[in-house]
Image (cartoon, rainbow, N blue to C red; front, side):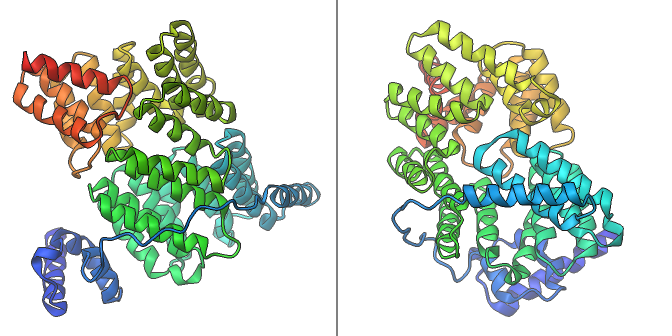
Length: 475
């Protein structure tokens, strides 16, 4: 039966290619096969053409200059206080609970404060306790699925998104939640199909265009299609700027993500410009502060980088920020301060059960990067990857396996990590070091050169290690 379905999808895709006369050289036939089942639902030809890249320019649209945007903090806080008072007076007010969950999740995106995630979780559960999804509370179920996603409970979020599709199949938001969850679980084909179905239904939501563009950008980046990712992000940013009111955090996020894309290819000047534009839009936006620190370090301004990381950590002590600051202290010869930061990384990650889940991967990579607790890092990474089979989970398994003295496991995992063709210097660096450990000097040299050619200062310490390894190969 499965084979017949696959054969039918292939026939539909081949017929579709013939009917719209898309040149084979410009169309990824594999993507059409994955979308063939969506054709049966009547998706428009333009949608599939977009997926193929036909009839569209790869040049990103021009981006307007950054400008400060007013904060809605006071009005949002007033709404939160009002809604909190409502649910105290009426514990069965599911509309208030669902709106509260949305406000708390927005606060989480703006500040990174995990207390808001806890508050959102309480609101979603209270809503569903008052009225279950079975008798109409799809808003509460959607809030719960979003909370689960933010809590890295991706399988639960996926399952609840599928339930939402059954209950509200005509809307775009269940497909958005499903696609997001599948992406984190490593089901990239399923995520792509979900986003296509989301796009087909996005007319209901004025911000739907922004939401689909940022997700298409993520998929393009994972596939190594940097220019396509830049185009989608630029389109998302322009669309967000045209919304009324303009969503400050969304616009800052788009500018920050454009910076991340530029940084990934070693374009440090452009990356810095995008990060600074994000901070014009949203001063003290913690993501942009940390990334500005990283790009300043890449450009040789270590004191400036330290200042930006210190600012970011004063807002949210994310372990990856703390570890990066420790590395910069070490480079500056401030060993005592570096050690204090390294100790703080583990303390933060182990502070609570939620932190342990959210920062599990970061902690495993920190151990591997700094050659400590290698076996513990590997076991932690492997346990997570058994459920969350995305390429960066595979990379974490590969890197920790290498440091734990398991080169064969590392080789198998890095092959999985590279399967999409992602252009990421750290992936290439890890692949090179794994090949070197296995005695394959030619492959090691190729990957290390690729890493440094793509992004020569991708990490203050690890890029230096890559150069040392290359120098050793040439001796």
